Structures are given as structure tokens and as C-alpha cells.
Length: 149
Image (cartoon, rainbow, N blue to C red):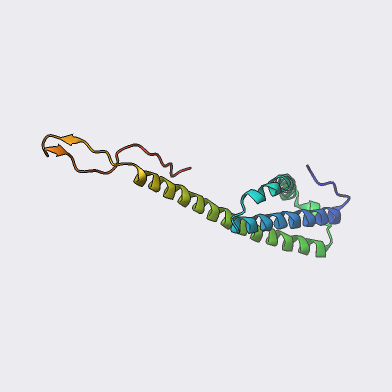
């Protein structure tokens, strides 16, 4: 969905509001991630997805035609620059929160896999050379842990 603006100042004003809302959503989700409240963050995804699509469309259009904002009021251009910086900072915080969650999930999966291996009985076999039961060896049963997932 593209923004509908009457002039350059109106477009700048709408972009300011859009950028501000996206920054607010990114900060809200990052805060939820920081508190390990991943499920509570999912309602934000729908709105963020729609707004991000509009933002991407508009920023691509402006990149192709920078003259669109040339006639915008100088204070609006400054405000748009400030909101864009705030949005980029919020995205960086959001990315760090996601990376933290991924590392936690990977660590949890790794710990569960190691515990599962440790909990399995060690196979023992009869050995005629040793004259009875062979000493226990490391578990050779299969367990898969995909480190790329």
C-alpha cells in the first residue's frame, strides 16, 4: 500500500508518522524479547509487517525519485531524519534481542540433547576375549543435532 499525499510536506509528515510507529513497534518487540515473552510479541507482527511493506515501498520510491521530498518544509526533513535514525537504532536493538533469543534456544536444545544422550543406558556386549561382559563404552546409538537449524 502506497502513501497518498497532497504535496511533499504531507508525504514527509506521513513518513514521519510511519517511521515513528515502526520504531515504536520494534522497541516494543525488543522489550518483550528481552523479557523472554516471545509469544506475547506475535500480535505485533501483523501490524509491523503491513507497515514495513509500506515503508519499503515508499523508501524505494524516494530513492528512485529523491526530488519528491525536495519541496518539503525543512523542519519536516529534519524530523524525518531524526525519526529514521531512531528507527535504525530500534532495529539494531531488535536484532540484538532476536540474536539473544536464538542463542538461548540453541543452548536449550543442545542441553536437552546432551541430557538425552547421558540418560540412555550404555550398551554392553559379551566379550569372549575378556571372559564375560565387556566394560561399558560410550553410547553409540544415534542422536541428531542439526547445528544449522
